[in-house]
Amino acid sequence: MQQARIRLCVDHPLGDGQPVPLTEAQTHYLFGVMRLGAGAAVLLFNGRDGEWMATVEQAGKRGGALRCTTQTRPQGRHSDLWLIFAPVKKARTDFIVEKAVELGVARLVPVQTDFTNAERLRQDKAEAHVREAAEQCETTVLPEVAPLTPLPRLLAGWDSARRILWADESAARDRAGAGRLVLPPGPAAILVGPEGGFSDDERARLRALPFVTPVALGPRILRAETAALALVTLWQAQAGDW
Ligand code: SAH
Image (cartoon, rainbow, N blue to C red; front, top):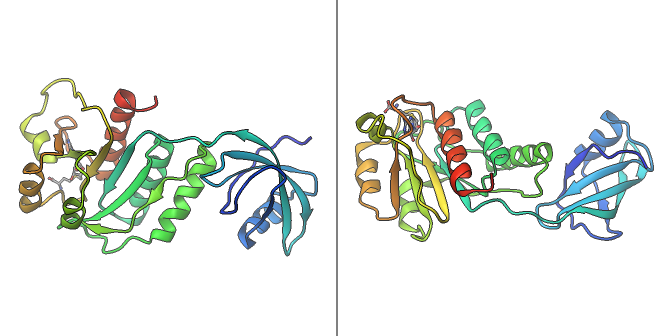
């Protein structure tokens, strides 16, 4: 059998002998770009049923058919880590989404803060980035993308069992060089602000909440995407699956 190198994220259920229809884009990619023919093998996952080897049964410009043969990996799970982030410029937001998936974040929560300058986040685009990143990094997990929510509403409905690790640039200014950063155990959500940082109002609100822990990431002010990456890395190394 031909070695399967292509990994595709699909919506359809996967299982023993399961036929899997393709979207137009997938048809174009598999048969137009990659030039696969009948009998070729492809790896499939959908975020629910693990990873499956599938064989191309029919390959054509207009459409094709795949059929699952064997399960190659069981459905995995990411560590219980969420990332709450304020959308920044498009390329930087894409970067945050992509890296969060690669680093093993389970759920992405875009938040609207006082100084968020991107007024919206295309959820469908973010989801497409999640799928692409998941295809590339060989995870079977498809992290969810929540709808963009204003910070006060998010905090009002927050389940206090999940600690918010708040990347707080003002704590960084006050407590630079405070020593080794130790993160609390248990389910967590990292909160990273926009380019403008958090407002005084937001800071006061966050400081008053018992389930929020401010975190300082060294004495330098980082870009939002760097702060997100750094804190996810720290958490994964201390409490996650690394
Ligand atoms: N313009 C702001 C900085 C925003 S940086 C200012 O000058 O105050 C964007 C986000 O990255 C911040 O809201 C914070 O969540 C995070 N961040 C940046 N540097 C940080 C640091 N040293 N420690 C903790 N969080 C940091």
